[in-house]
Image 1: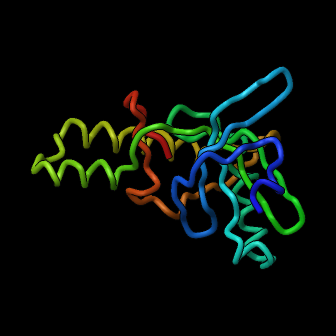
Image 2: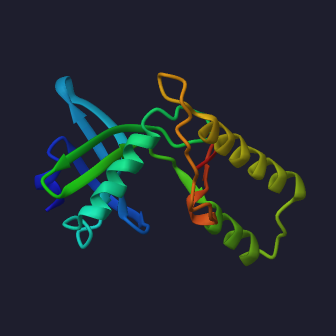
Length: 163
């Protein structure tokens, strides 16, 4: 099903899932053998025919489209084919905060205070940017992230922290 919907993306593997969507690693393909590794978030099949879920998924895509900040995962593209929707996003290689904390627990290492402060400060920077974001007329967008949890905080291999 996915291959038929996303013709210029080649799914590599499933990375995870959340409430409304499933995230896959994919190659974005283009002219001249262009290829870029991206993340593709596809609306869950069981929700794709429900108008309220479609509206929420589309609303998420619209809200995050212009959020360009070092601590927010970049959104590249949105598509809708019939009832199926997907968002193409920056792929973050690394761990989510839940996985990172579990690895520390497995090794019986506490999270260093300085690292905890760093992570929280980067999440706060991303949230502050999103909350202050306005549209082209200057009107506040009123963005409120309603699902801040360790699974939604990504730590890249390079040390970047992103929502």
